[in-house]
Image 1 (cartoon, rainbow, N blue to C red):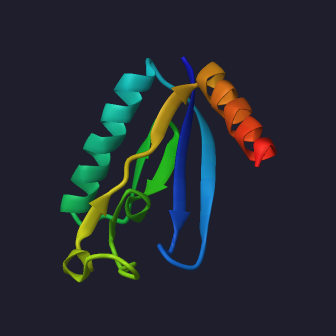
Image 2 (cartoon, rainbow, N blue to C red):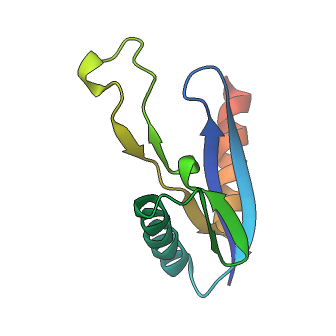
Length: 107
C-alpha cells in the first residue's frame, strides 16, 4: 500500500518543519504501530536511529525532552514527550492538504 508518513521536526521553540515521506507498507495501521514499536525499542537501547519500510528516522523526532516552558506549567519542563507521526494513504494526505490550503486561503 502506498502511504505517507508526516511528522514535525524542530527545536521546540524557534523553528519547526513538517516532513512528508512516502512509504510502501502493508497498511497504515501496521506501519504506525511498527514505527512506535521500533522507536520505543531504539529509545530503550539508546540508539539514535531506527529503520522501517526503507525509511530511517531519528528517535528524537518522536521522543524528546520538552524544553519549551514559556507560558506553561513549569512542572512540565523537562518531561519526555512522545509525538508520533501521522500515517495515511496518499488519498488521505491529498485531501488533508486540500483542506489545509482552503483554511489558509480563508484567513
